[in-house]
Length: 148
Image (tube, rainbow, N blue to C red; front, side, top):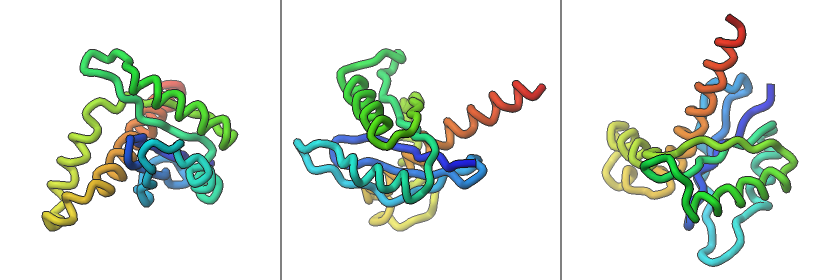
């Protein structure tokens, strides 16, 4: 079974995660840095997808508190669609509301030193893990329901 790549797309950094080969557990990868005002780093993300043998990509979708889309949501969708096209992989979107807050809480509770907890890259990577794990869990539940 191919792995799945998870993406937390941001203005300055892109959190990245990958599933295990059974698509059950999400694990963080190094965060990809974006240069302000520049195009997203598609070649680097394509390389990661290929090297990690990702069969699909999951992108966190930033909806507002009411579940509605915004200009930023449209930008993230455009990024995800373009990445999927360039990497020749299907893209799935997952509601990422409150993911960064949950990521910060997970990091705070991890017992890391204050300096390590405040590293923005760690928050972005953890957010990508949470986005991907949400997708993996939902897919597993759907598969289990279909098997019943």
